[in-house]
Image (tube, rainbow, N blue to C red; front, side, top):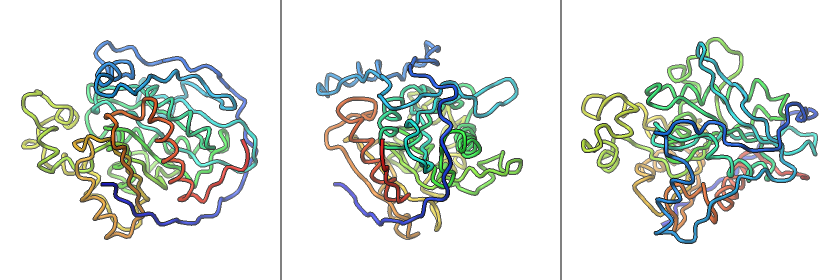
Amino acid sequence: MILRHCVTVIFTLAGSVALALMLGCSTTAPITSVNDPQNTYTPADTYTKYVKDFPQMRMLDGKLPEGILAFKNLTYVNYGARELQLDLYAPEPTMADQRPAIVLVHGGGWRAGYRENMMPLAHQLALRGYVTATISYRLSPEAEYPAAIHDVKAAVRWLRENAKTYGVNPERIAVAGGSAGGQIAALVGMTNGDVKFDPQAKSSIFTSDVQAVVNIDGLSDFTSEEARKYEDDPRKNPSSAGQWFGGNYATKTALWHEASPIYHVSKGKPPVLFINSSQARFSVGQAEMIKRLEEAKINYHAEKFSDAPHSFWLFYPWAKPTATMMANFLDAQFAYKMMCH
């Protein structure tokens, strides 16, 4: 069943600046961070896992589309000597208005994955007129929850701070992610303005708040019985969630609750788009979160691919329709219409 509830919110685009996009431009798209042999959440490995059951799926080549500029390996935050980087894709400067932007968060069970995984989706969204940033963040073997939340908020802040350089409308920034990245994106959006999740807030004049959220096949509630059946399985020793939280549900109950986006829904939080695969386990808690969004009068929309694997957004034939769903939803929220490209 596809849940739908869609209310168009009208905004006025604020200001315009000339785009200064030619500096540091790259037209190639190499894989720059696949350097951990234990990290196997890549499109190639995922394709091997699913292709037998979904023979229609195809790998995407990652070729940079004509008219899109790439800016690679941009450092967005430092933790001592540790640098976290992002890759940014933007339409060529063909219009005066600043463009809305999307921060894309990869999946991988909070302990694996690479920002390059989101590159094909970023390309498609850039073709729709969005400035897109695929980001690396600290995975659980390096830093447990809530480090990843801090990192994504830092990336949003960096994008807003550098809005003039890359032609971004700082009042129209969305966060989106797939799988674990979808849960992270939802938590980032639902904790707008909460300094507990944003240690940089007190030292910056730029906010990390986002104006929309896209959760692609990511769970909404770690604490539900259905979620714990998968995420708290003692046979996994530890499970992906258990590794991220530093303990199982019994020993880290408060963290499992705190990290569930569903418990942060309240009036004034940003609109949410859910896009689901045909495997219900990955969107656990969504129906209950939708009830809470309705109670708080927050706009949402939900879509489902009737025959698609988890990680569908990485592959043909689902990547382009996924980007279309995202762009249509965000166009409505931001009252955005790409005039030319």
